[in-house]
Image (cartoon, rainbow, N blue to C red):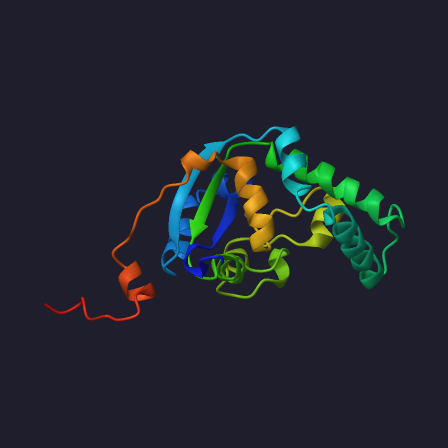
Length: 201
């Protein structure tokens, strides 16, 4: 049985987030929820690593290609192909170029509902449609439309795992098991302990 208090998720602050000096602000947003940072490093990803990262889910190409095709249809634009896998390949090439363009900060956060909490705070994939109060909604203005015109990936600051299954695979790709810290924060008593009778002497 999975310990829900130890759910983990992977976060990558992408090159645009690093270059815009938003590392501290992004970490603060996650930290304030009560999630615990258990691993962090700065790297310049290789194209091969980025390719593996986005293909940890074997259904990713089909999902992304179908989503891209629907976006073209919704906006009344002609897609470069009607084959979702061709569109997914274009998206992946853009992501490889984007993520390997400079340093990224890769982190593992742990805590109750970590995947869902992080995705809520991060906001929608497209900054334009992200709510005010989310990281993407507050700190960037990019959109799918502009990214398509420029023939590049949308610059949305962060990658966040979309499920616990995906996070497990992604974490294993970016970190060795010994790089994940096992420690306790004092505030975990308030968040997780059944009774708070330890608060008063």
